Length: 72
Image (cartoon, rainbow, N blue to C red; front, side, top):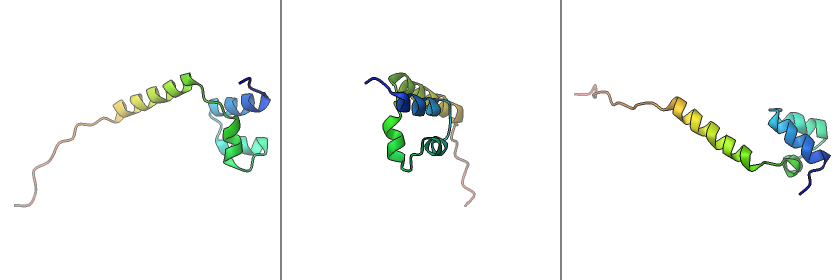
């Protein structure tokens, strides 16, 4: 698929971190499906997303310990 200006613009806006609602307002898309039609996700972006999830999970990993019951 050869991207046209719509694909290039909408994909670029997402990659730049622009909220979808803003992109939809700029392009005049009233429904999310139209915006998604032109948003192209590359394999490297999928891998980057998985790496971000891995880093997040490592940052919140906690050791769980059970305190003794207060009921006797």
